[in-house]
Image (cartoon, rainbow, N blue to C red; front, side, top):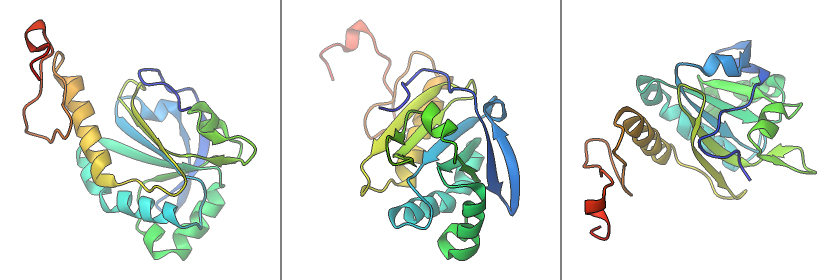
Length: 188
């Protein structure tokens, strides 16, 4: 079970690989910006690089939305670097790749597979106040898509900046939203 929606992320500090360097990342770094935590089971695997590569292909658009991406596995930051150097797909990544060998971040988000030491395939959208606004966990063989993630981020940002409005199913940026009220009950 993933960490609940509308709860603050828990404190963490971790070493990550980003743009050819090892960096320290903590929960304090997230304040004031939208963030995506993109958990995956392991480096040098099969579905994981397709997902991470898809996010890499959309990273510029995510940045324009003010979103920073943090991919997380229980591998070390050294393994992330080796994978980045060895794989053409992973070599495209410009976002932060957090190493979580002590399971702190994975445990904080409640996506650690007990007895395996691996993260579930999970995505969290975190608002600038550090509050989880969306979560998705999928089974091992079900890959995620960056386009779907982008839609959810845009909806979360819209709702955050337009109190009293909500985004219906299939909502896309620029489309009509709903303003829940007594008048709408039973009319949708």
